[in-house]
Length: 297
Image 1 (cartoon, rainbow, N blue to C red):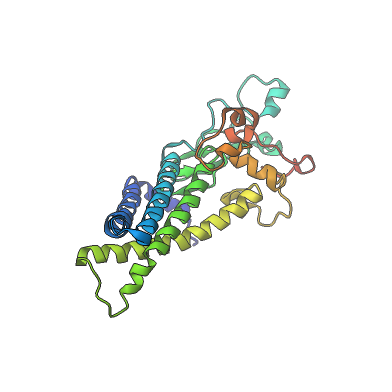
Image 2 (cartoon, rainbow, N blue to C red):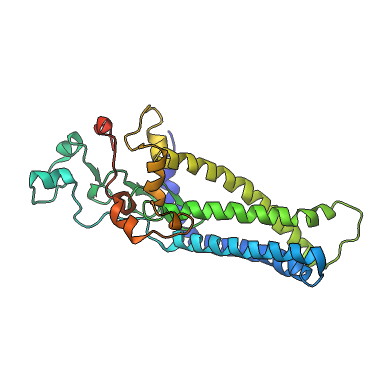
């Protein structure tokens, strides 16, 4: 008998804020190793060493600010839920006034391509999926991320991508800046510092190296998903489909996630004009190729 791993997804709820505290703990260890233990004192050395320390600290704090801004934007932004009494446009065009239910029209719903969630007992908009961890339907759901203790969906996917982007830059910077201090551990030279500060430097280097490599893999994967205007779930579901109805070309696919205003591309926010002009950013309507409209949503 095959195991259904999704039955155990509810166990992830128990992690709760523990993962947030873990992230903040890693940030704290890194901050101590880079700022307090190594490059902060370097500002008093003068000369080239002070200039290098100043550059590293400025870049470190800028990336850290963007990382935390993006991270907490993902944590506290609702990924998108189905509005109460939502109905697809096809029914509005027919002039129906009574909401559809699965018990009244189960076969008709499927034949007309209208999706229904039996767990939430409601209609599902295009690209919407039910999350077993949150226990609700999420608009354009990508996945449930334990690191942010939240689902990643239509309304916070951009913030999640920026979190990956700035995490990769920050962890790469920390890895490179602590590399000379890490190499010293394997030489016969005398190492200044207490056992505690040395252990913190060693731990910070190993953690940031591991995170930079792992996040790079996730970042590359999600860049390819954005380029094809798809999500992690959809990529799995349509793995045998040669063409994707929502693939509008790389430029338009990018705009479906990041908007058209370049000033907002690298911050976890959207311009009011983009929110008004691009329905996909609201998570309920998505432009598609007319010749592939019959493809399953």
